[in-house]
Length: 514
Ligand code: XMP
Image 1 (cartoon, rainbow, N blue to C red):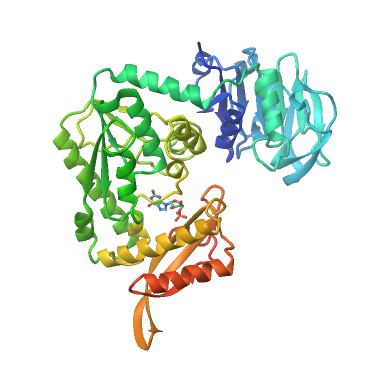
Image 2 (cartoon, helix red, strand yellow):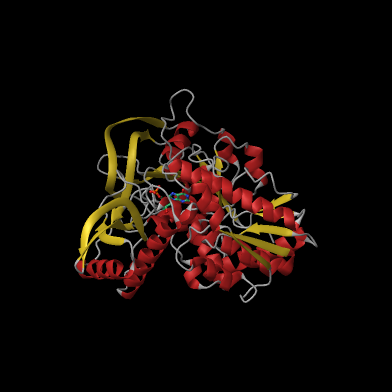
């Protein structure tokens, strides 16, 4: 049975990934492709529907991203959003021009006419607008279905050809009934059943991996983070002991984390696989000795990681497959999926340790968003505390110790961090704060403890609320909780005599300290 699919054609809009996520939230599978993707390729995918995203250009300008007219003649429903809506009109004979009033932000939209796109949507609803250009007259065959105070064509449609254009952004949560609108498009208009379900995906992936791997040997670098854990468990369920997971403990993990990973994936754990833990902390500490500059620390940790992994892989000998925990945003952000600029050349996509002797890569999570990876993890029965782990940087505590790294400083930051986490959990705040941790500053200051003068380090506590980790604000932690954490850290962590709470937002700060 072929899986029903909706395709998002990306014109460079900032919300392109959101469109795909919202569609998947309707249980309809969705993928993003650049507007440069050939029509033949799109047709071959047999999409049930096509969505054109927003974008930063003016569609009437020379060289602006466009698409061939035949896209609208395939008989497949097309929904254009913002730039996508304007482009649809422009190509089909409507008029798009620079708007006398730029609309930006939450805007009231009024429905003019019954439309299957707006089924169950209130006659006056709030939407998110962000445009300079506007549709001054719709293309022949189109009826206007909604307007705003400044925008005569907030939505238009040609029901016969199943072409729909909306000026606003239903994918943004500020559009109150946006999900309903997208659901109406994919379900009522495109006729998708909405049977993309995580349990099906997991079962199907396991089956496919089993077929692909056959009797082959598979190697996986396991970090204990969400992505590599979910990938490893999926592989283990598919091929059991043909899988070997190498877990490099670089000595820069949170307190007890190495043992926790071993408890789950090691011989006493729940899964059938070969687990190799490499205790490499001394090697990392030696390499890091005296190094203060954050980027150099990152580089050293990254390179040493590859070296350790390579040595282990050599012991195992040649393998047939290497597992990568690549997820969909990595693919899109690497410029491989949609139209976004290469934001980061993600080490997971394409670039691989060439030192490891393998034939093919397996990326079982390549099509999933982060929240979907977590759902897959739950489906696979992975313990919740692993599935809902906070993000943790690859270089670990190496970038949470400002200045040079020593074993003693690692101990201080691990202990302080464990206390902070314990107390936030005890106060019931752990689920509401996006990311929180302790860092060790490079500052030593004079204190007094008992009757003694101290000259010790300051720990900084960081807790932020964030949706996407691109921007963040310091979390408001009750003062009593902070005081308790401070008291415990000073009393329990030797070498620390001061505790600070970091109030900085991102921007201008970053979430991590380095
Ligand atoms: P920043 O500090 O850039 O952090 O505001 C944003 C998010 O990314 C994580 N982070 C990293 N993750 N390697 C990683 O794998 C790194 O070098 C790194 N630096 C930051 C950080 O924990 C936060 O979630």
